[in-house]
Picture 1 (spheres, one colour):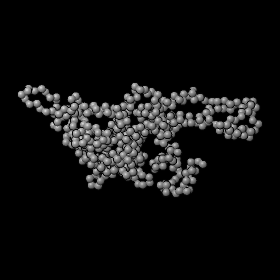
Picture 2 (tube, rainbow, N blue to C red):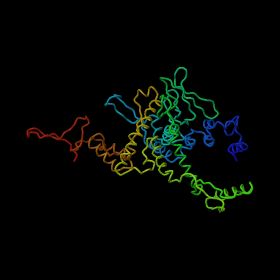
Picture 3 (spheres, helix red, strand yellow):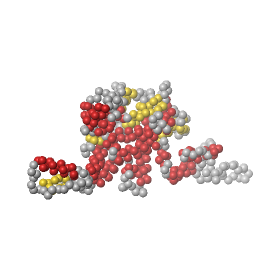
Picture 4 (cartoon, rainbow, N blue to C red):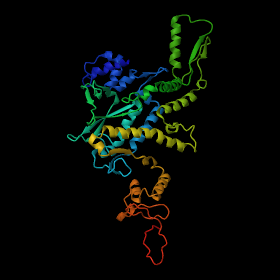
Amino acid sequence: MSFRGAIAALFEHEAPQTLGLKNLSFGLIENPGWYERHGFRQIASALGWGNQSWSGENVNIHTALNHSVVWACNRIISETAGFLPCVMMQRSGDKTGTQAERRQADGHPMYDALKNAPNTDMTAMGFKETLTSHAVLRGNSYAQIARRSGTGVAMEMYPIHPERVTPARNAAGQLVYVVKDGNAAEKSFTVQRGKPHDIFHMRGIGDDGIVGYSVLHMARQSIGTALAAEKNVGNFYARGGRLPYNLKLVGQDFRTDEDFEKFRTDWERIYGQPHKAPIIPTNIEYQTTGLSLKDQQLLESRLFGIHEICRWFLVSPHLVGDLSRATFSNIEQLALEFVKLTMATWLTRWEQELWRCVLTPEEKTQGYFWRFNLNALLRGDFATRMAGYATALNNSWINPDEVRDLEDMNPIPNGAGQAYHIQGAQATLPGTGEPVGLPLAKPASQPQQDLIVDS
């Protein structure tokens, strides 16, 4: 049964209205993008919706994610952004200078939203992971912000699929987000100066600063070539490892057309089953055509496809399972470059877009901001984590209780872990912050001042 017939048979048993389709016209099959915009993404993909590549493969979100490298690149970026703690902070006092005090804004509703659950349906990790994936693959991610009436303080956030949102500018030059949800009427959300935003929008690289480029569209040639190579390998094994061939007639011809058609039918029926070998008549010569997989350098081209796709996502190949160029001397540096170059960019986008979209104008002046804690990336490296704590303790910019908090441990009783120390004699710093050196030798006529020195 054709795909058109399958859709028609489906609607014979299920009314279009119950499927969310009103006044359905089967002429829409010629426009698969309609199905994508209205949430029927699997149908759109089956109809060939996507970007045509030079290899002949249609590249869309579903076909691209069927390639393991695209899936792995999207996964490593999205999951890393998802599990890193995103903490809402607030500056107090001098909000711009070095004397500004920073504390966790645990009294704000969005503190718990980005730490635990932004809404009743999702965890914080799932929310950050989903929106990061949208931005990585499509260049844009959106979420609707639910605010408290009166004050406008953000309470919850709900993700919106990028295909449902169209950013535009109105006659006054204001940014407007038009959201289409199935057959419901369109909703418009206008960004107005001095008023809270209704839509959270995180963008990738773009040419106008408003809409980000879709990497699947820009990389369609590289991904399409990789998909074609995968299909070629699959077809090779589906044929039982047989190369394309011709049958050459030697000597006398078939007596009638019926004999010819019978031979063709019998041959295709038997040869189409990889485990069966047909008997070739004496007047038929079997000739292979095309290049072998070795001559096609299929293994080398598939390996190159891994590096080519990783280049689009700025992900090191060793993170997607290709260790061909990884060594003991460079793999640690490659992991650091992923954090410093790839993840630092996406986390900065998160922090700045949260500040821009979620906070009200009043909250922006009150010193609220977000920071991702990259220390979570070292949780699996105990030795490095402990060495970092030791350096911080010896240089007096962290105290034992703060270290214990990072390790999910209770503070030392009686406030003994709140003191700061300096390297060397480990002298306890006074509460005034003045530096304390070792006690100097004094004349015997003058009393010696007591100084507590940690032993």
